[in-house]
Image 1 (cartoon, helix red, strand yellow):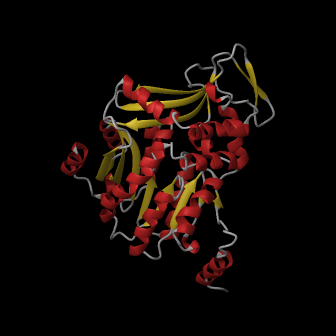
Image 2 (cartoon, one colour):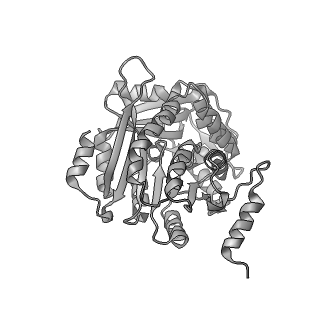
Image 3 (spheres, helix red, strand yellow):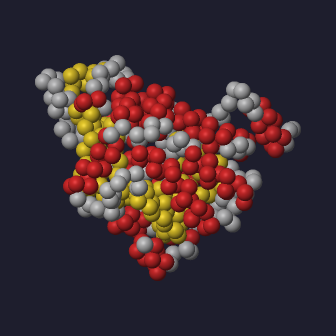
Length: 383
């Protein structure tokens, strides 16, 4: 029998064709089930506020069309939120890195994005643990390939130590199965999970998602969380947060792409509304919705070849995002029993006038880690 290590080496050699760029992906879900879920969400109740029919977070990136639209948006120089996020991450990570330098961590990336941030993390972690595994996780296999080109190929990370996993990590059973598989893969060695790019803000129930992730963390594991932040919570700031996303056409093309590729609805960009509001007195919520602002009902064909009627004023929520106050972050992490080990925050510097918006990178440990220090945590939140 061939030894397992020889099998891995043979596989790595077989896939190491730079001209073709093979991608190895573990598909963990039946894609017909995902299509049925999307169809059901588009049958939601009538709402003029974006709280009925919807395309939930993962589906905004699901499929080749939305993936291409996302890639175009991230490379648009007018998408200043993305540009500022990429630039600030390098500075923030340098301050977090000393806390994971000696741990010998493996890396689990929840939502791979463009792969640029993952590449930075991989380069540093691999210096301490050359045998580390990299496990990018995303609902979209196309996004896994897109991000992997940057994080793995451009970073020259060994393909035999990469295990892309296609699952929706917002589903409890999926996270449980992922954690069990990772335990069999790496044993008791520590894992660094990441949820960057303000991904937490894209989910209707952000606390529930954070709790799902916390529930799979072992005492030796850590969570790297990156969110958009705000120092002001008022109507003017809420409108500014919505305008921030509205100012780039490429982002509008991205948020409408899932609707264009999965229905027969003719989408006019003038029907896309960016709504900013204050949520629970501790965050700014931005909803991007399509609205039927015509004078008659519209019929929309669904993926199962049935139709749904969209009355005058009806909406489809296309995207949700937030900007968090320190109060909201403290509430979320406390509720999930996560302890901040480090937190770095910086303000956006792409406008002349003072701007309340920025990004925050937090390194969090589960309460069971023994890292809990109330004085340290209070000091971090007070910065």
